[in-house]
Length: 334
Ligand code: ISE
Image (tube, rainbow, N blue to C red; front, side, top):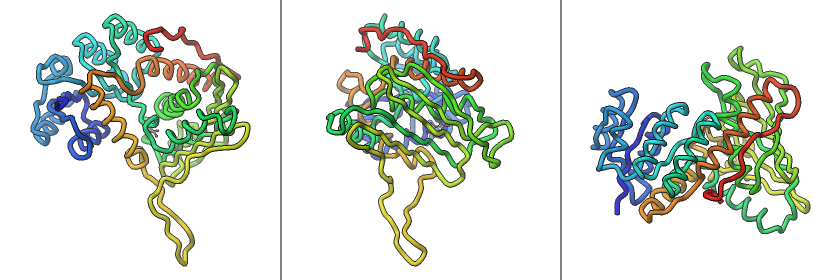
């Protein structure tokens, strides 16, 4: 069976997904697109020999669409995720599921009323080979209990419209989700430290920031968010356990040793650095849809990440530690 996918918002991320689905991934095809910019929808539809729909609602309702991928911007997600649930169609929604925890709660309620898990949130790092190996080592107990995790999330530069709350709910949200998954527990508090600002940024931005999170059992996670580091897309993670540490290794295929020294290359962006993770994520989603099953992060994960980010955003302006407010996990997501 070929899963016929309708894509909402085929911008940069969406087109990268289309390219992987039509080249290296099996079992799926993007047959329909819609976009706030009808010219873009028409252009992408022509390129993939698919249909351009005038609205996302029409695309979701179309008989030719078995499953929906949402790659539009965050505030537009809720209405389309709810429409896909109402139509009983599996939906893959890029992160963040919604910009607020209240909106994510509405999605969870609708999904529980529908009686089956239909929503997958695009947190791709769970599919990265290195993070997966790190998790299986920590889960094996060989290194004892995990005590701390040091993360760094560096981007070369960000555009002028990037604001400091985006450092939390657009950038650090990746570590929030990955650490919840890696450690298998929820965060209870957030704090933000503000180091000396880099001069190589737009004037309005406080960059870098350090987000400090604590889990239910007391594991401390620190995340350096430095989005104008200039040199590349650099993701680091080191877990410190009772009997040893485990970190992400360098991700490059080759190293060069010559008269200028010993070096390898640095990724420029998330598509470059997490290419393999995106392929695995989307392949697993399409295969699961074909089997009538759910895979990947749930609406609960989207909600929990939003709750932690809300606390992190409050911690940008509140002094000290901010409590993470979250409902108890519904059995539906157990
Ligand atoms: C972007 O939306 C991403 O998801 C990237 O992985 C992240 O590094 C970047 O900061 C975000 O703006």
